[in-house]
Length: 156
Image (cartoon, one colour):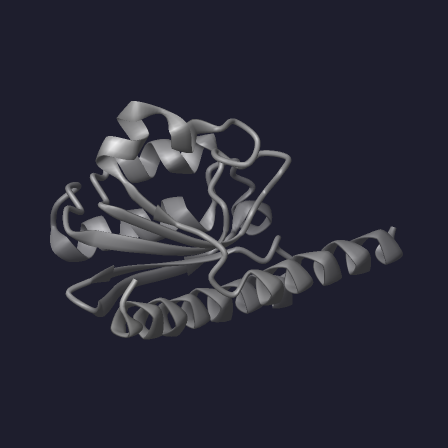
C-alpha cells in the first residue's frame, strides 16, 4: 500500500468514525460509514436502527442508499466504502449488490462479521468482486464500541 493510499484510508476512516460518534450520542450502536468516489465523500451515515425501529437501519445500508440517490444509480462502481465496524452478512450483500469495489473497515466483529465470524472473505465470489482492507483505526473504533456497551449495561 502506498503512502498516499494510507493517508487517504486514514482520512476517510476518521470521517467514518465521526459518524460513529454521532450514533453514540444518539444512543445507537456506534457504527459509521462513508462512501467515496474519486477521493470525494458522496454519502455518510450512522446506525439508526433504534430511531427507525428498523433491522436494516445499518450505517452501510443508509450510506449506500444515499450514494445511489446522489449518483442516480444503484450501481456504485468505482466507489469505496469505509466502515468503523466489520459489516454483517446483510451489509456485505448490499455492498456486493451495489457493486462497490473496495471495503475498508476499522475493527472486526467476531459475533456477526462477514469475515471474522463467517469467513466469507475467503470465498472466491467475494474475493473477486471486492478489495478488502481492515484494521484502519481499529483501536479507536473498538474503544468507542466498548464504551457504548459499558454505558448501556450501566443504564440497565
